Length: 152
Image 1 (cartoon, rainbow, N blue to C red):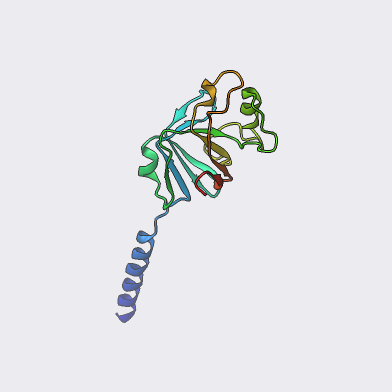
Image 2: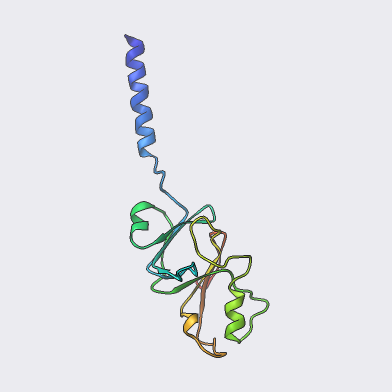
């Protein structure tokens, strides 16, 4: 009888431990953005979820219902592009700039791919010619971690 009571208490404690753990807690969520995925449909989304350096969710408001994170960034309608900026070879030519975004094989933003991307204040696909002077680099993410931002 005592064994049955101890067993039930143990099972109740285990249940509460597992139910209090949040298995959907991830490293980073970016909301309210223009995520230019460069996937096969050239789709644009508003939210991305990142965990362990990998994109695990791309979409809209459903991402914040599926995942939770202590690190939520409101991108304020800024533009997210795959890849990293090549700072050493910066060039005022917009085509070279666009090509420099796609370093390290990061040519798309897709689930299960490495989260290498930049956040810009402008849509570079709308810029013509060689004028990049008005585009501001806001942040650079390498493997899901901020390696540069204008705030630090």
